[in-house]
Amino acid sequence: MRIAIDARLISGTNTGDSTYWTCLVETLIREHSEHEIIFISNKPRPREVPFGPNCSWVVVPGEGRMWSLVKLPMAARKVKADVLHVQYSLSPLAKNGVTTIHDTSFFIGPEWFSEGDLRSLRKSIPLAAKAAKRIITVSNTSKAEIERFLPAAKGKVVVAHNARPPWIKPVEVTECEQVLRELGVQAPFLLTVGTNWARKNQELAVAAVNSLPSELPHKLVVTGKATHPLSSARVQPVGYVSEHQLSALYSSASLYLAPSLHEGFGIPLVEAFGCGCPVICGMGGAMPEVAGKAARVMNSYAAADWSEAIAGLLREPSTLEDLRQRGFARDQQFSWSESARQHVRAYEEACRRLTSDS
Image 1 (tube, helix red, strand yellow):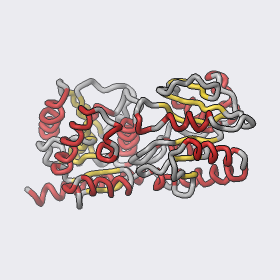
Image 2: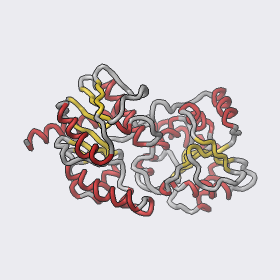
Image 3: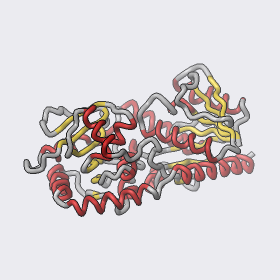
Image 4: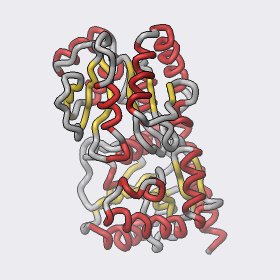
């Protein structure tokens, strides 16, 4: 097959969508070299993009909706691609289109979006579901939500779970100590990822840690963009960190806090699992599915309940160790190899359906 990919999200951003693209493409290049991958972008190829002998990079000038709706699908046809794979919005001109819809949070929590973004998503994604030959999503939970909110998706949805990115991995104690010194972090500490999106619910993590009993000295280390007023002595923002530094933080933290209100998958959960960091998470979206029995899943988003649960875990080293071991095992149940196999299956089905519709 000749697989065309919208390559605009594959580098330059530290998001779940970018991580997904990068990990998928790396695996396709390595394990499915019989297929050709054609990257289509409006910019030249960055050096960090995965690339192999079965790859080519096509630059199509332009930007905005006209690029996505017209130039991208026309370029895919020009290079005789069998499949065009995008994320979310898919042009009706892409007769052989496959789209990945990670979640339907724009239906579930409209308050998490600006009016403009909400209006655009609620218009474009139903059209994408109608145009797509196959829809890929990253959890069974998201599949059920997609089929609930997008009737045109029924019968088209393929689940291909995410997995831990290979660049996030356990770090030895001595290396961890070096990284903590670089960042000015002292153990013991808790960890969460900062973001400016209300859906991620960073305020809950801050409030819960601020309410911990004084005999528990743990601070909350916040990576990324800290949006809450972090004036508390309990909270330490460290900004954006490298992949190695993040791995060391996961490997050193007493607990990872994932208070998000909704996730299509929740890659940080498996990142923490793979680094031996116990997890406490919310019940929103696919987090219970991804967590399995390897995390403490809270059925409440009250700060007092989270603070009590965190304190209870920190006072029970045997429970933390049990969660740590369960996390290692859970991490092994997700793989990009299996995800890539499911993607190839979806591409093949899209091609067969295209042939039968022709």
